[in-house]
Length: 508
Image (cartoon, rainbow, N blue to C red; front, side, top):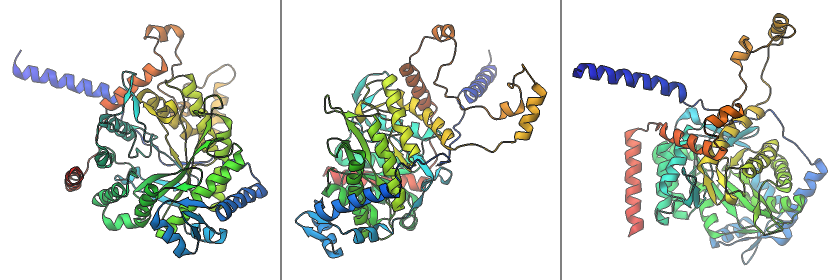
């Protein structure tokens, strides 16, 4: 065979392979911000809302909340709060005045404007898992998470049609020194994805570095006027904001970037088991953090955040998928609408250690009340297992296809031409079928490609694969098909230089 013939044959093979790949692995069709047309559910009448509001205000006025940070204590005293040691008591009039300037919604800008989103009102975004120290790998085995895993989840977040925010910390990379982690992760989030990102709250220094890195990409003036990242800050429930969180809050608020101010609730342990009592406590905690952000910069966007789990009365372990946290999320949503602020919560998590039935029903039982409650920023939307200590590649894939189904359901009814449909009914008549009509072809129902609806014999002949196996195969395929979004050379070069210099400085 001549060299020319060999080249021609390779080219033909490549062409066929490319066509097959295009058919079997089409490029993602990204879903926009979910604009909810279903819900929200309001469980409380006006009297119930006022009851929880008064309870939250009473907690802040009488019990107070600790701000374990000397700068924050000085800021509160200067603003007129009652400061006694580290305990801060905030009058309701002062608090309501401060949170009145928090925007009800804001645009969430991505490096690629086509991937930008919106948070607040009837809008919902889905965000990646966050902070797990373990992964359940492509081989199904549990192990400490690595930087390569973080990169893989960023790639999968980029390729996912329904994942709006790949984040910054899909897993906690155990192979990267702590002082360098935020640099590696922020660099990866900005270069491996072109969707909205999050910032680190590891330390004040880490927060400042993240702000500097997004300024390299978006420009300092743009960042000062627009949201390009959000940061997740946890309150130590009950009633403590610590120094690390408050230092990060000051950095992000001053830069006009929102924080998800989130009490971490173990209902029955860190809060009362009562849904209304627990919500009153966490509302007080989150609003106190939000109010402090407005002392730093009036009008800075913020998010009322919660992370709600139950507690097993058998072992004391966190418990997902139980009814009470679902009810609490419904109440939080109603209170957030009362205050006119966006809200965040967690979902799609499970205490299971496998992609199994428990993982499925835990995840579904957490997601439904969250979306029916009108949540604006849904964190941990894919992959969490083991009570949020692990991220499973398999479950991540199973979850993102569920997100597409939730997106379709909560988008509500579409406009329909009933007259044309009646014509189809008339043409087909009794005993016919609608499989071949134009309407059926043009309006297929949402299909989850990981769900198996084949006959038993076909499923068995194709390997009798479990949900876990199917998810791992799909994850591997998605990583193989990842396409890195382009970035201008001057931006990527400046990011590389920034990270290299900081690593040297933090290693000294």
